Length: 195
Image (tube, rainbow, N blue to C red):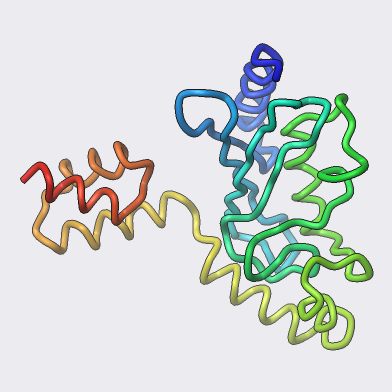
């Protein structure tokens, strides 16, 4: 794995995320092999207003092998498993090229949200609904977006509220959530272990 290339990709992605391209990423942990991508739901789609988290594992053969990506956020889409978040996208499989980057992969996922490919589905049930009952598909996809694709800020505030309602101070709660990568159960365990 080329660490310098990954560092450069991350810096470029961070710089470009300020330009409102609708995609950004964070590195998880001490090394460059685990990222979380964030995709804004494209305007004028059933995903508009949603914030979708993508788990990204970068293999040791990168950039010669594609990153492994899956949706952490539940989504109703023909090319994304509604159960596991697995993605059916050619550039994440046999069409990957070392010229591509994490950013281009995230932008391709965002484009996939605009233009589903129901004839090459990851989720056959969703694809069938997309092809045979578009109104129901649109209604379901919007509902899932509203339910599952809340912004990270809104999710954080909900976690803080729940933990503060247990009698902990906001300062202690924020620190614990930060120390536990926003995992609410782990943060609670940390707070209780330090009490």
